[in-house]
Length: 319
Ligand SMILES: Nc1ncnc2c1ncn2[C@@H]1O[C@H](COP(=O)(O)OP(=O)(O)OP(=O)(O)O)[C@@H](O)[C@H]1O
Ligand SMILES: [Mg+2]
Image 1 (cartoon, rainbow, N blue to C red):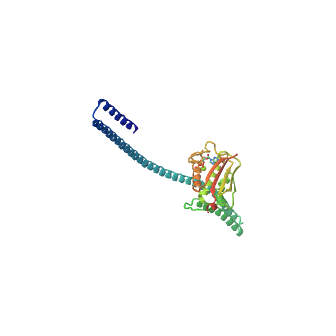
Image 2: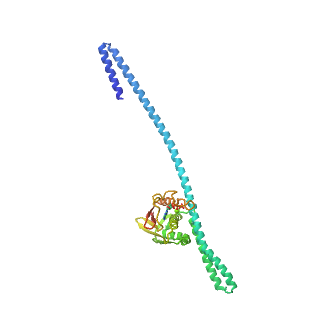
Image 3: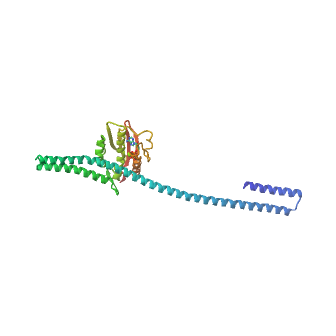
C-alpha cells in the first residue's frame, strides 16, 4: 500500500513538474491527476478483491482440512476401541486359561483322595471291617473333598461372572478368595504367599477386576521364579493407608524385572516370554483397570525381585 501511495505522489509530482516546464494547460494537468487517482483507486480495489478471494479460498481449504481431520480422528478412535476390545478379550481368554489350569490343579488332589477312599472301601469291605463308623467317616471324608471341589468351581464362576457390578469390596477377603483359587498351583510351584493386609480396608470396584489385577501380578512372579530357578520363593502382599488411598504392595524375590523392559512393561505387547507362554498384555490390562478406578500401578526392582505398588481410593473417601 505504501508503495502505491509513493508511486501516486511521485506521478503527481512528475506531472506537476513536467506541466510547469512545458507550460501546458491547467485543466489537462487536473485531468491527468484525476486519471492517475482513479487508476490508483481501481488498482487498490482490484488488490483488495484478490485478497478477499484468497482469504476465502484459504478458509475453504481449512474447512475441508478440518473435516478430513475429524473423519481421520473418528476413524482412529473407532480403531482404538476395536483394538482395546480385542485386547480385553485376549486377556480374558488368557486369564481363563490360567484359571482353568488352577482349577485342574485344585481338583487333582480331591479326586485322587476320593479314588483312594473308594479302593480302600472295597478292600476293607472284603476284609470285613466296614461298620457304621467306617461308613460315617467315609462319607465325611468324601463330602469334604467334594465340597473343596465345589468351592473351587464357585470361585471360578464368580471370577468370570460377566455382569458384575461395582460393589464395596473388602480387600483382605477378596485376596483370600483369590488365594483359595490358586492355592494348589502355587503350592506345586513352592511359592509362599504372605498376606498382611488391613482387615477393614474396602474399595468400590468390580470384584473380579480387582482379583484379576492381583492375579496378573502374582502369576508374573510365578513365571519369574521358574524362569530364574529361584529356590526360596516368597510373595508378600502388604497394605497401608495414605490419606484417602490404600497402597497395596506386592513384593517378590524372583530376580526382578529385566532392566531393558522395566520402563515399558505397562505398555501392550511387551513381554520376555515365549509366544505360548505370554502375550505381554497382562500388565497393560491391569493398568487399564486401575485407571478406570482413578488409581495407579507402578513397579520398581527391590534387592531380590520386583515390587508392584497398587494405589486405589478407599471406599470411605468416596462417601
Ligand atoms: N514379578 C516379575 N518379575 C520379573 N519380571 C516380571 C515380573 N512381572 C512382569 N515381568 C516382566 O514383564 C513382562 C510383561 O508382563 P505382562 O504380564 O504384561 O506380560 P506377560 O506376562 O509376558 O504375558 P501375559 O501376562 O499377557 O501372559 C513379562 O514378560 C516379564 O518379563
Ligand atoms: Mg503376565
